[in-house]
Length: 159
Image (tube, rainbow, N blue to C red; front, side, top):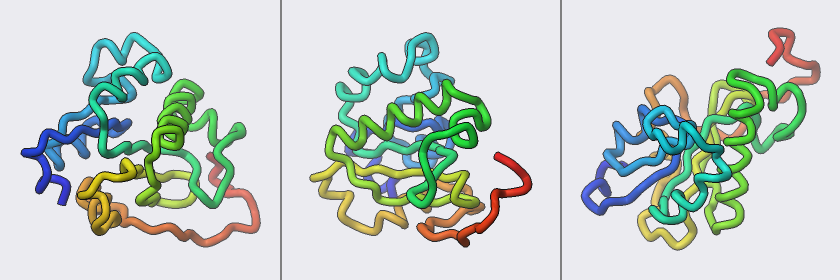
């Protein structure tokens, strides 16, 4: 679905520098810096002007929280690549909120391991099936959903 708009030169900012740009063929800014030397040597907060300059239509990030659980605390902030990853994710989330993006989809393995898709408000092509857009950039191992079983006890497997 996103590939249908590749010829229009749209851009996205993502923490998932491999799959979304590959599948969509959109211009991409890798928020983590694996594919961008400038970003690799600066913080996510200092690269925000780059994001504004390209006018991304889509912001995609991998988070360790969801709309159903808190977005702060040890379990969230120290997971996987730790606090630097968490700061980058929160910078992306904050940028989306301050610049008129709409949460189009949040899905993942569970409520503590998700992918967020924000679409810029007023983006005409963003009015369609947001879940299909998100699904078009996954490997097929996850499907867009917004509900998970509620747990009454902490996950015994830990973060």
